[in-house]
Every structure is written in C-alpha cells, then in structure tokens.
Length: 177
Image (tube, rainbow, N blue to C red; front, side):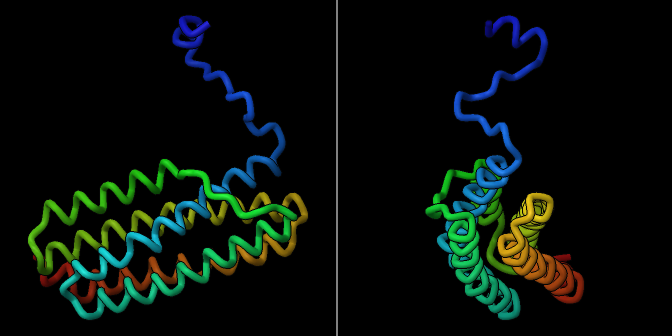
C-alpha cells in the first residue's frame, strides 16, 4: 500500500480524519488554540530581546491581546458545545523555531529588532490566513457566535501586522540598514 501511495502521490487519511467541514473547522480551532498559547509563552522572549522601546511595547501589547484571543477561542469552543482543546500546530511550531534561530543569528540591536519584526509578521500572516479561513467556514456553517469571535481576532491580527510594518518602515529597518 505504501509503495502504491508513493507512486501516485496520494496520501491516505488518518483514521480520525475530518470528513465534514465542521470537523475540519474544529481541527483548525484546536491548532489555533495551541498556537495562541504557544505565543503567550514565546512573546516575552521576543520582547526581552528587542532593543527598540517601541518594538518592546508593540510585542508586549500584542502579548496582552493574545491572552484575550486565547479566551476568545475558549468561547468559540463553548459556543460549539465543546471543551477547549489544544493540538500541536506544526506550522506555528516551525515559525516559533525560526524566530528562536533569528535571535541566535543576530546581534542585539537594530538588525535583531528587524529580525524580530520579520518573525512576528510571519506569525501574524499565519494567523490572518487561519482566522480568515475559519471565519469563512463558521459563516458557511451558520455558527454566528463563532464567526464574530473569529472576526474580532482577525481584525486584531491585521492591525498588529500593519503596526509592525509601519514600525519597520519608519524606524527599525532604517536603523538596521
């Protein structure tokens, strides 16, 4: 069987694979729940390694926002009559590992700050894609409360991304040049 799959490129689903869009949406919520909790643990390290006061404030501000986003995901689970469950998000785990490498590969100062912004924006872009996709599913499935919760977080993630871009362009990247 494995040889046949290798030749065709087709991937056999796991035994518990989602076969309904709602199940796939719930899997996504579990990933995001893990991702947000991982960010709560990792953002303080980014803030401690930033040298720009504005960047430190931005990261700490997003940390506070992320804690609220965790609570919002818990409300989404509750709205679906489910217990909140985190399942390791391989994508976020990889992005966070890369962020750690950026810290190791840069000297403290403007270049590291530019690297922190780059890492943070990769996080934001993943979150924007994920929250946007899950909001689309929630709307299609008629889960209005879940939709509103996801859209609120999506707005915050987009704002954070814009703020990081503005900080990078107006100050950090110029100093790192």
